[in-house]
Amino acid sequence: MSSTAIESTADTLSRLGINADFASSAPNLHKNLQLLSSGQIELAKMLLEMGQSHLFEHWADPGVDDEEKKGFFDQVDRLNSSYPGGLASYVKSARQLLADSQAGKNPFDGFTPSVPKGEVLTFGDEDFINFEEAGIREAQKAAFVLVAGGLGERLGYNGIKVALPAETASGTCFLQYYIESILALQEASCRLVQGLSPPNGGCQTRIPFVIMTSDDTHARTVELLESNSYFGMEPAQVKLLKQEKVACLDDNDARLAVEPRNKYRIQTKPHGHGDVHALLFSSGLLKIWHDAGLRWVLFFQDTNGLLFKAIPASLGVSSTRQYHVNSLAVPRRAKEAIGGITKLTHADGRTMVINVEYNQLDPLLRATGQVDGDVNDETGFSPFPGNINQLILELGPYIEELTKTGGAIKEFVNPKYKDASKTSFKSSTRLECMMQDYPKTLPPSARVGFTVMDAWLAYAPVKNSPEDASKVPKGNPYHSATSGEMAIYRANSLILRKAGVQVANPVQQVFNGQEVEVWPRITWKPKWGPTFAEIKRKVCGNCIISQSSTMVIKGRNVFLEDLSLDGALLINAVEDAEIKVRGSVQNKGWILENIDYKDASVPEQLRIRGFRINKVEQFEKNYSEPGKFSLEP
Image 1 (spheres, one colour):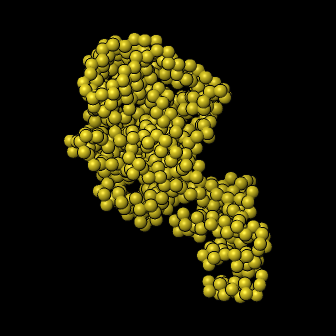
Image 2 (cartoon, rainbow, N blue to C red; image 1 turned 90 degrees about the vertical axis):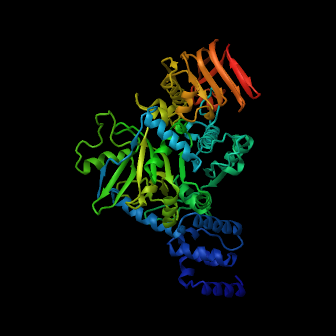
């Protein structure tokens, strides 16, 4: 190093208030200071003050790997700016959480659980229909947020999960289904509130849709949207927020882990879907929505093909009950592997209504005097409803809370220790946070409730591979691509039954080692039936659908009157075509054929289901012009 460089380094150190210990704690860094900007030196100072001098132990002399060294500080800058409070806050939290973990501290110490207040709905009854109508009124004041940072690798699918078909009768992928459902709500809300019917009615409502992506999914999500013209949504309605990863931790002192294959990089891992709150806050979107008169933010996850059947009524509950936080829930059996929504009351008077993981709920109940723990009541279910990670938040109180916290969500750490001494890890760990832990910091005055609906209507996530699903104990949900698709047909069949259609009983079949109920393959575009009242309006007379039948409705104004279906019926209609379908449709239909998930010649999205549809024969009718039509085969 030249004498000029030494002087300039000394000046910089002095200006930044860095003392001589700097050089001794990280000599390799000290040698390289002339490469760094003053901002990068500030970051270096922060790392040393946090006890992270080991990050520079392997640094080469100036002139070797200089670009890698600058790249290191680019990464540190990203990690620092993307975390509420910066890296210093991250390391401080990590040390506390790791100390608690090492000591075996119970996060629920001092809390007593009880069943919170909420709304339990029965599909199709008067209350349900009223809540649905209230929800449709509120829909034009809502924004939707999809958490979609994950790939489908766990499923045995190499793409992004939202690109998977929700069901193969229509081939609609999850992202298309979500967008079309939001557009259907947007339109229904316009019609109900303003008496306007787009596209011709001039409704100005545009429901915002945010997708949280990750490094793994961002580019592919953009490509899926752009190559499909955003599935009919205006591109300006859709915003993508990319989640950054967080630094990994090597030990109980929260020393940041170095990437095994690159000594100039810190190892990172996903932080969890709780980041969605910080991203929304820092993006400025919440204020824009608030200023535009919006009132609700609805959060949902990437592969639940039933969710939007539950949203109108749930939003109606939020509005009617004035909940600041409304968790969508399903009945859960005692000890079932799904978190329970629980009210926790601390000895000091603090309370919160929060998801408690199933493996913590039973011991918590026993530890607080409920000797039987988590048990079913007279309904056959646990009194603690099952959390399905779909949240409805009131925007005003949400902004107030995030202004206090900066969007930071209570975190946890889950280190895998090498042995009982808990002094070293098998592999690096990191802090994690969950979207549904948002209520943990709310004041007692916050109105936090839940809405319970039958699982057949609201919850059929697709997250397990064929191998994992086939090992699920009999009677428990598979949560696979197979069961997810069958759940859509079951829900649609049961909804039509409730509307007065005679839908045949299902048969049992086995696909990919999973025994499932096979109902008629009934599916429709969201705009055909955004609510139960709308579906009832479109079904009349004596309609009969056989078990082997398939019905795909792609159109809004399709009415079923005295229809007898035994085969495959497909109707495609433009917006202003009104079709009355009557009479008997009989053909050889579509047949489900078993396929082996190990058969590499079959596309992945079919392999993970264990079946494909053989379209033997069908009756298909297309209506490309407006007008009133009668279809009597």
